[in-house]
Amino acid sequence: MSDIRSQSKLKKILVDGARELEIELSEKQAKQFLTYLGILQDWNKRMNLTSLKDPKEIIITHFLDSLTILKAIDIKEISAIDIGTGAGFPGIPLKILRPEISLSLLDSSRKRIEFLEYLSKSLKLKGLEIIWGRAEEYGRKEGYREGYDIVLARALARLDILVELGIPFLKIRGLFIVQKGEKLKEELEEARKAIEILGGELKGIISLRLPFSRKLRKLVIIEKILETPDRLPRRSGIPQKRPLK
Image (cartoon, helix red, strand yellow):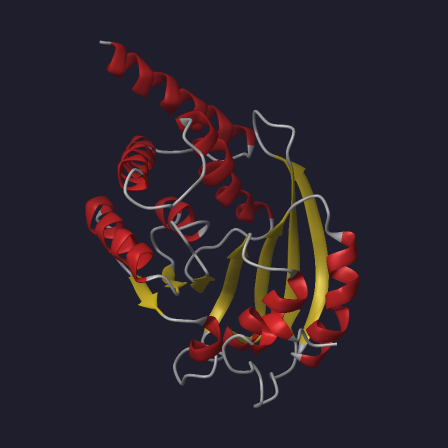
């Protein structure tokens, strides 16, 4: 009985939190999120997928935080790639909410890829590609370079590094949406030149607080207006060592 009460409480946190973000979850979607939670907690005992142990904190900090992307754009029938996705954030929560999107998840860890493949089958997700590799490599590959309407990134690296990893994947007029915390001002100043070099333009920043939390989330929205120079992205490891200036 206690487990049933616990599941009911977690479902209420999830549904109420989504509603605070002006998102209505169906019964099926709520069930998928709770299945996701259970699988994440189980696998997290064997490998480091998240430092969070409290299921409520996972719902707020990972699931609801991922859904804040919808404050920047109501993604529907588009193609998107989540680079450095880790345990699937923000890509999988968005796929649960918008199953019609064509989504690629990219990560450099083979173990995380195994987790994502298991998760995808368990949630019965369609139109989902899971890629083991690095953004620097796939951003130069035909079929991936300039192949997406939306690129997503969350807590992956500093902005001046992220733009070199993300913008090459975008079609012209596509959007790169980066989730950042409160300390954005300095990162943004350092990234302005890199954004311009890569063919991007800063379109805006959306600030909001997560449901049930004091944490401030900032969404950086960059539009690709020009083709990325052929020499970019540079080979693996170089953007991190020598960000574009």
